[in-house]
Image: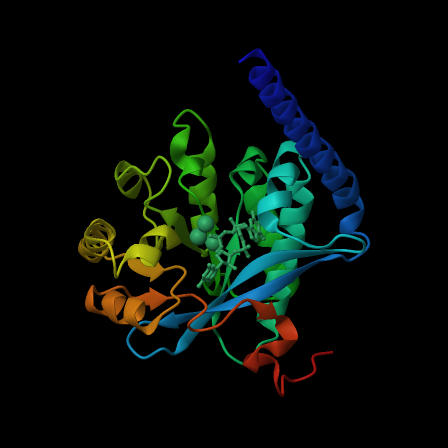
Length: 275
Ligand code: C2E
Ligand code: CA
Ligand code: CA
Ligand code: CA
């Protein structure tokens, strides 16, 4: 039993060391990544449930490491949040996404993810305003996606910051709804424009009565409150049919399109050259 215990300990210790080393590597290289232009955005369509027409795109951050290749945002965003690099990266994403959307031939919306860590800076609203001003993008075309953890700490200044963002004229979406510490009280605390139903429920919606019930509760509540709903991670026509039946207003997922580079978007074709 003693040997097993020590073996386990050694493996556990090794895994911890490896992950700590990996994080240090990410941290060091991430500092260089912006300047070296290794970070860029992909864009995934969001469609109207009724007819499948594209209404907007979500900007998703990508990092192509010169040696390691693509690194997932799920791996490097947490490191950026812990080290404070998220402010610089978040500013880059805002400017890049607004600049891109401002040159489209359509007036489709652009959704940008905001990390809860970006709310630590009281300059957040000023950063968003600067990205809008620099690009000339009308505020109404920018949708900011936040997670409920932003509202988790009732004593924080986050609600005031959120109201400042809303005041700019941007739309605010509540991302990953139904996971984590989800509380319906957040829907009373702040007037969201949209709720994004987490992919974990969409994945199960055709097979699990429980997942379906959760989706029905969210769409029903949203309808009563006059809030739009987007289902994330829609991969099959069956899931889409079910979500349409439940009155979900928008759909997003591989069924409609994977995240792609900006130059693959239809609104780029024949875009007028701006001087
Ligand atoms: P998220 O905001 O929930 O973004 C949706 C994720 O689901 C994306 O993963 C997207 O590629 C993926 N996805 C979309 N449709 C499907 C589908 O049909 N099936 C499956 N299996 N997956 C689908 P991605 O791009 O790897 O991003 C992961 C997370 O990283 C995001 O989750 C978001 O939390 C974070 N992230 C990405 N870009 C940014 C950013 O610019 N800023 C911040 N703060 N976080 C970001
Ligand atoms: Ca999102
Ligand atoms: Ca999400
Ligand atoms: Ca998510």
